[in-house]
Length: 335
Image 1: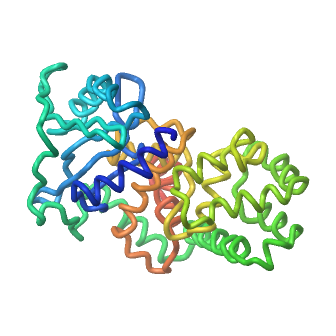
Image 2: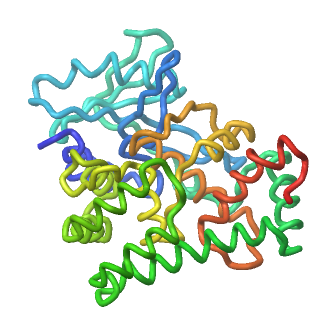
């Protein structure tokens, strides 16, 4: 069993059922970045609570290893360093059978091993508040954006296109009848996906290997497969269901089409805007599933901040961040 499967099939269920952590308070697998100098490492699981000001705080870092029971303590230095970087009071090393819990020390090697799982915070601190914390600068930018989008000029038309394009692809890719129409699907992918290097070659590969493309879509639609495995199995020609030239950018477009309210597309300008708004200080490379899922979660967290007068899907958040970074910040105008 791979480490990913140990984490998803054994450790996460244990965290919920055995140790009583609410599932909503578990961030993972590989969704929390740890900046180690110029390198970004991804913690396996991170458990959260909320303080009296509704700010999310880290309670415990969980490091998962695929190893024999007697070998688990070798992971302590790694987990300890992650916990120290993230200011986590506790950490745990596990292989899904043995769980070694620690109170984080201030220096490497100073952490104290615990007899059992640390006592959870009171239930009121485990409930996510409906109040969303954001800087006044971010609130002002969102208000400015939505004031302008109501004028229904170019920025509205661009946001409408992204919303409608993902919805159109959704109708096609989720219809058994339509997805069997190869010509319709190829035409729709050409029309409703974004321009990218290698797109023409990718569409030719899909056309020539259409049965493989349908298997790829079926994998992304599978309800019993974790999103981490879906991305792992579909990204690039060397993956189990991948298509040549079908990298992460293409897969995120398919995800946003299949699940328009849950996923959007990862793109460098949007990442830069997140850093400008101090939403994150992590230098995402736009290359891995961890990058994407971390980025997408931020978009989901931001979504409730918007009035969203036209009921656009999650691409609305993407468009706000993209236009802010690419146009508003340098030119001080949305149109």
